[in-house]
Length: 442
Image (tube, rainbow, N blue to C red):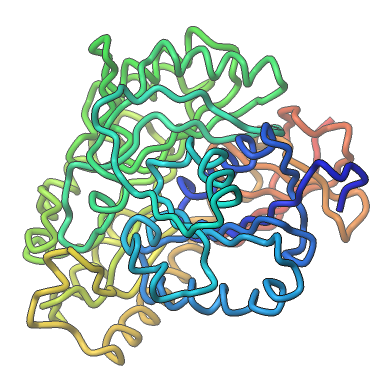
């Protein structure tokens, strides 16, 4: 593990969204300051953390199952302590401690910055602790902590959410929405650039409802990042259709050299009646108007989306509306899931739940139809020369590099490690919905 006996090993498993991935990186960075070092196997750890997600089904079962796998390690190593963070930690709190005797501590996403002191407290007092309170008093001021940012990394700009979609537990597990100051964000990005980062992805549960303490909105933040930093590329996720406006479209078009030609715009359903039950605050027609605005302003932009099938009350016609909107918009990528009831949410109490076999059949049909569409849409890249930000090389195939286009397409091509971090031209000669292949142009 390590030759220094004062340094202890920490092993973190991460489930869920990019916010959770970013949170785990923050945990590693904070614990590193307290003499913990990441290890690759739980067997080498004195501290194990499960950074959980409760957005999808059976998250608590996953936690129970994983902790159970560490039972023998706990017997063999009396210094091993195990904690659960993330949304399940926030959702279950002390109940998780009572249900899972092997656990030593539980904490929520709003308590990550107290993790080193929390771990020290557990070790010193030999007591089990649950810490999952939201802090609404102090401003949202955190420094982006990334040990090795590399070519591309994430930067949190908001946390929490105020939308209360009826299917979503996020407002209950991450709290109400709060934004970081634009000045702090610009400082963070400039520091990342100094460390060699070429691309940042701005993160938030509802990223485009961002509002700085200076009054700047998301469009103004994007413009400032494009003009006042030397970052080469900027992405963002996840945006809400209700907050996508002409001002943001204009900024994205006017700064296309830096702001990527890729927008993730979750639709969730193509049926206005289901959207109303979801509390999405737009109709099918209003969503399509937003898509038209985006495509008219930013020609050639690539769109992806999130879709939930089998939401309570979804009829065959509602599902047909979802299939048709996928075709009408022409999403290059979809992220689709079966609806699963989450604690505290309104939809969990709806009486007209859809049968599991119906959900499964609809999800399979959606993926099958999109697979055909994805192949058709990918053909537009055949023969094109795309600017690829090189992220790495293939471990299994010598002389093969990979990176992403501004449209967020993963591209494999002939290249070597000296290209990592550079933007290079690649002519596409083989296409598939999820990845492209090409030849480096000299």
